[in-house]
Image (cartoon, rainbow, N blue to C red; front, side, top):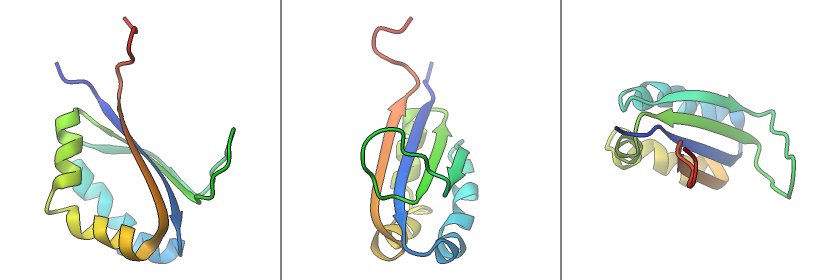
Length: 105
């Protein structure tokens, strides 16, 4: 049985209005096409520990690692991923992790 996979993004957006118009509004439909869903997306970041300069946090859930990987590698997402990396943001941290933890029953 496949495990859910969560993708966490901590991003430094140059202009939030531009980001949402050109990128953000298009993602829910594309992610849903791979069985994914947004769990959180906010500018209200609260750093609990450490230093970071991002201003946008996103958390998505996919039903499996395969569907998460298929989304990031898809032709549907490719132009938006390039746009985000090359024009709309100054830095990006995208982390993917499974629901299962080592040693957890």
